[in-house]
Length: 463
Image (cartoon, rainbow, N blue to C red; front, side, top):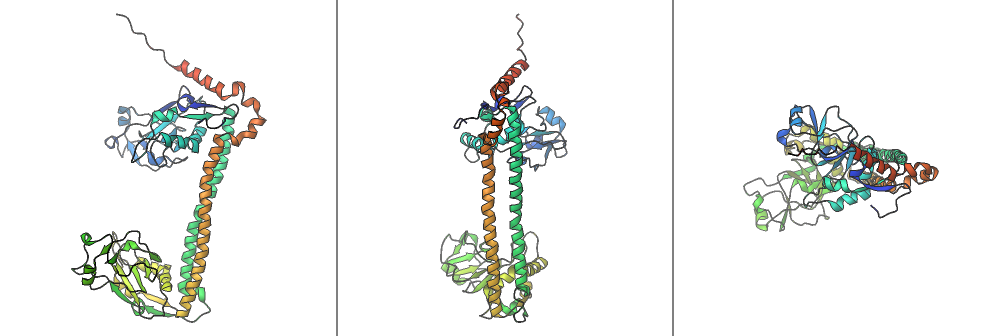
């Protein structure tokens, strides 16, 4: 922690030395599953409750008073600093706000109670532990391979900057104000993707209702199977078994996870041999086909066009091939139609099954499609692409702004850690950071008070 010059009146101290006589630094309690009781009155605070600066209150575990007494548990107090000794992120800290009932915490959480006359307030200690410098120190000293952890013994020996008490309040107040502004900005930015999602759905709804192109020709209504030949995969005795799948080969064998809204995802691929492909009767794609998922995640649609880098492709039994009956129909228009709220409502209303939803081909074939002329289909696609591109640009700008906001929190904490937030305050208040008001004098008083509070050792009686 000495890689930079400490401000006037500040000093460094190990965490174990900043607590007052009535404070403590301790591991949480070793509470096993057998010790827990869902009807118990003692709340068990776990890693899931410890946020990066905030208490999340997510867990739902309890134990009885008798068990807590038997295990000699340390009960939490409001304002205790809780530090997660395991990721993610490792070393995140928050203040315990109280949960309306007695509570203890688990062994993977370090409990720091600074006490009533500590050298560092709990509020500022929380901020220090979450700062980039301290987080880096934790990372450097973590142990473990599959899942990193930091020990309480290491944590309590780490040094933190200790400003004069008067300055600590100024720093904490500034951090509260600045970080609240950051969180408010972040919250507003995080709402924008949901707004954009609703905007895209509105665009799709307008596209398939004719509102995007109201000045053009009247539309027709046709059943899906009037527009497409519907072809399912081969489900007979020759259907490929898992042990016949290949990592590479002659024929790509599509599964539902390869089909996403508006396109394919070839992250995970399986293939079948040429011999296997040749004995299958149905399910081979030809260029220009649409593929729609009919099992699991329903209604994802992709176009098998020239951009797909595989020549021989078959579908599995969870999909359906839609092959156009009229060549000048636009695949892109039908992708818009199938992704629209109109089609999504049809899917939700007509799907069967709960554990694994399905959309039977017989039902799908009867869906009524709004069909504009081929020319209007092309115009609809152009306008949707234009509006979606605009939304995509906004979303990218929002993501960039969010990245800057997320880094801003760490930047503010780093400035506070170095004393940069209160540089002018120190110039204006020299008497509050020197002499008896300095951090060194404060630590000396804490040291003396702790020594005075220690009980003298009993002298053994001589026989």
